[in-house]
Length: 268
Image (cartoon, rainbow, N blue to C red; front, side):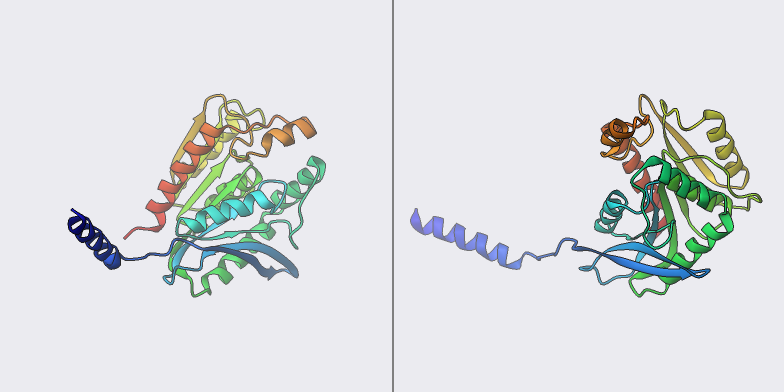
């Protein structure tokens, strides 16, 4: 019996010795500076340094609070899943807002000057394309709240992205002259969001569709503004804002976004 047990054990060790050891992702984040128009922008780049192959890039546009830890954490998640993720800095010099009044002022300033906003995005994309770890198979953009509005306008401007995905994004049209765009557009919205007007959202979706985009609008029952951010409940309480985290809407919208990114960027 002992001889049989030893033989089995040696057999198991032999099989184990032939098993291939594969390293999991090691995500590293770093400041990624770019400049245009005399302004320096400090984005956050996340990638899997255990991966030697060039990978498709995804731009991530922050909420109206600026490039904070939440935006960086989403970039880390994308990097762990095989993308090179750049969380851009829309306010310049890494500026963030601690109060809604400042956040509103910062975001309105950007949305009222689309040419400057576009130039900053183009500068980020141009520098990103130069990196050896970024593949040349196209880029995509996702955004949250204010950032969702930015990526919808990127699509309206016909910028060279394969997909634009918005989470509880503001459907303010900043682009005065919409251009053709044949990429994927996903708009994830809380059905009980008082900050996003249904008519404005429908108008934005219709305009994007008219420009040739493949548009999908998903309304999440009971979800409010900021449904994807676990910090929304605390922000709602502190500033008396109509925000609320919704775990179900967060999970469903994230899964749908990942499917869209895979379809748009991993075409092989």
